Length: 464
Image: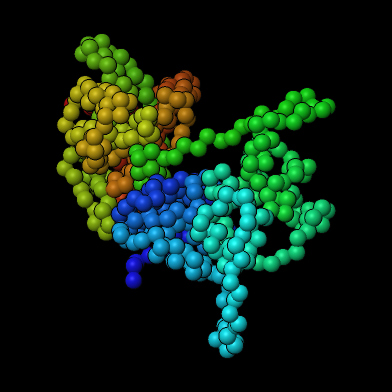
């Protein structure tokens, strides 16, 4: 027996009743491997990537990409091993029934029915596949009401199967149909397109079976909108632009989602006086000819603080904690491909000038999309600075397997009390430390933050 398997519309969640096959990533007749992306299926909430669970050939595609929404359990395609004949595939499709199809437990006790009369040939001008025509003739099905889902409205085998499996129901028209549906008798995809373009379906005449409004009916209205009398302006279509995750953003999303779900975060907030560091930076840049930013000084300060508090300079791998002799500080960079975190290696052993050169090179590579995996692996601590965007304060998500990340807000002028008791102003920098409570205790994190604050407020130590 050939190994032929059905590929049906999956069910994600209790509320899902139908899905739309947005795109096939494997063409009919192509071989695919386990773990390979087969297709994209849209539900009312998300777009899901469906990966292959075994090696096979996509022998027959029954629902093309972009077709109308299909109920859960609908046969979308058939997979088989290489060399399986088309006749074997046809025979499998002809007898296939969804897992949730109704069954009759008393069928075994009934008498054998009389032989069915020979099928009568169907005379029609409709475009229909040979397999669909054969099944329709054998079952005596009237194909005229069937709305073809194939190319140019061609009736496919699946269309005939769905018509045969459809439960019998009275055909209601006019006000009775509207009362039963509670809205226009339209397909789910037609309703979705109408909502996107602001089209009222109550007065639209459908061309589908039993007057059902189809996607083509709505698209015809979009292409040639009817004039609106008494309206100041016509609604402007504003369909959303659907952009799938690229490889980098997909990895970042997976890692941060996992971090937020699995890592018990706790947060420590503080602020540091920045006036001395600002003055020292200005002088150092003039004397040394460097172009070090405030963030470069923060990398140096964090690296020195990590060297003094090795309990914070760690990574978490499963049930083990890895401690490191040197501080490899990752910096968050917004690149064209999304958020990336290149690493400044052994920042505790580098001067501020060397750190400035290293960060500038990493930022240039990030903006050009040339960061390698080695540039982003192995960090022991991260710094995310949004102060240059005017963000006063925020909390960052830990970048696993690291155990802490520092969020830096904007520097702002604040009222302070001078040693002589008079009031004055100083520049303060907002700091928020996110910590993995599995690996770092609150007291250890607080001591690290106090050391970091001291290095920022007394920046001469950064040149030691």
